[in-house]
Image (cartoon, rainbow, N blue to C red; front, side, top):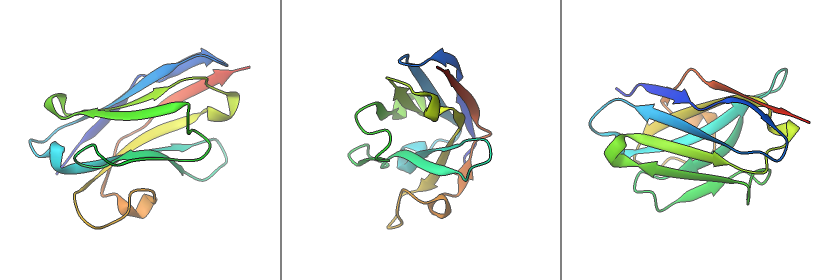
Length: 125
């Protein structure tokens, strides 16, 4: 069982940066793949970025490539999402999700077993 808590959201102007954190409970977090998703008001939840359990596989949505960076610190049981050059279209609730290592994908909602409660990111123009 893994519990996830997101933090780091807030209000930022367009062009600014934020770093989101996803802190996990559980001694085996290092064997979990982690993804970030977001859901804007009135829209479906969408994939943003993912990192494999060992950190060697990194995946990004086209809309955030070159602006967002996902990373993990297994010693701290934490995954980060560094968000630069933020745009108003990035405004959403951001969720982290985790699943045990295995052959499943990393970009679909159904790939993940555990979800955090989300953190709001608002980008003003």
